[in-house]
Length: 362
Image (cartoon, rainbow, N blue to C red; front, side):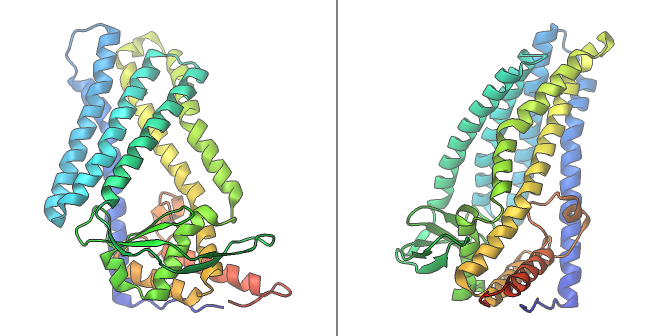
């Protein structure tokens, strides 16, 4: 049984306060976006036809959302004094909003919608978004400073029939203090020779064993065989959930009474906002078992559960969000279980594994 960390009372209060504030901020942020289409509905005074007005309403909605997001990032950049991080957030998110605007215009023109065309448009959106995110990621990671081309990480793939695998060659990069990523970032681009990116803050906080097991967690997202079923469900969600819900919404709106026609496009935008939120919520729920599987893989791979626990404790102290159980965590609005639950799950899994006949203790 691994020893779970004992948290200082001052840190517990600080973490809970930080978590409450960030959760409240996220809730207000969502409500602000939800209010935008109805603010536009109240402020609309143009005298165009239905199609022209609807197109303008959709473009105006996304334009306002972009303006709000830019203002938010500028404010954070001034407060944090991290210009590159704000620029990175803008480069990552604004093109996504532009693509979503085009997708919504297309779906509105299909109104009341055809499921095959809706799915095809969603796949095209996903392809373009994936290409852009690849370009953005390469730009953001270009600031990494190579530390070694021969970082040694020995591992074992999970599963009884899979042979031991050694990862003798990996490239380790350190991200500068003012990088585009959060403090405590550890990121791995998986390949035959993985590329590992570690923030300067994480490198200073973690010792060699702790860094190695956190890297193994990131590798586990690609190489772990734990919770494979959830990965398949995640891909099913990515390919079909949003267009299916969008199609259902368009069919429902087509049956709306004629008196709702002046506000129909605003109802459509509200529905799309809710659908996008539901999609994110489903992604978080499906991501949780994948994260837990990656935790277990990291410990199996490095055989250093104590280093994993201590590494998680140190990273939590650097960013004390979602460390202890909270409402957002319980409802599944966070992509990761809180740190306490993750460590308890890992301890229980290791205890159960050690009780199996012939099992080796880590």
